[in-house]
Length: 121
Image (cartoon, rainbow, N blue to C red; front, side, top):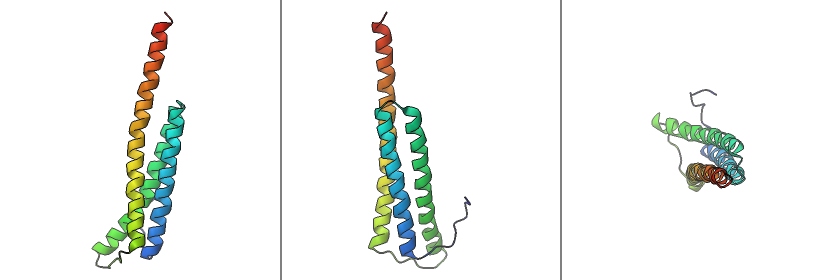
């Protein structure tokens, strides 16, 4: 992927791209949470990384719009674009919180292993 934003499509097209990528990012994060709940932390971390990549795709769409606006080409902000931004923000927040929950599950699992080791002696 190039770091240079591609030419923006219509605000509507970009909005749908953001919604799709953000939705996928959120789904992957919640899937990761399920794996962490089952103590499969390797798979959980893999899914979190995939979630981050999807968020990055959405963020790049957002950057295209910001670049367009900054270059003097006005971007129409409509309800769909606001909705897309909301999807991106909530997906990012969900992933960040889920990462913390995964960390807590990992700490809990480590303590359970430690406790079992102490009790078996």
